[in-house]
Image 1 (spheres, helix red, strand yellow):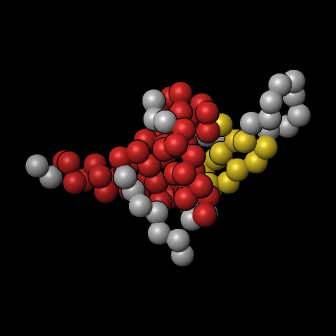
Image 2: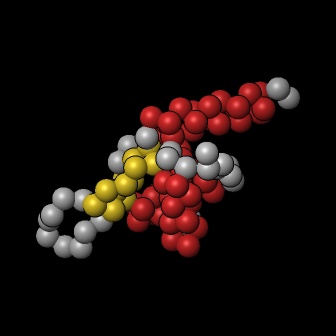
Length: 92
């Protein structure tokens, strides 16, 4: 199985995906304030790990957008990571 490296930036992306559900990469960039050069590689790693599904937005006026959404595995693993982080900070 592909191992996901949970950096501060990847946790920011995961938080947005948990909160917003299906969202475009550009909207993640706007929400987090991270650069596209940070967000898109994270989304690719999450996709390769089967934590994220992606699909093209249905036809509409304007450019198509790729939408990203956590898979059940991604949701479970994200919630577990945030719980472990919370437990770590609450020990002190």
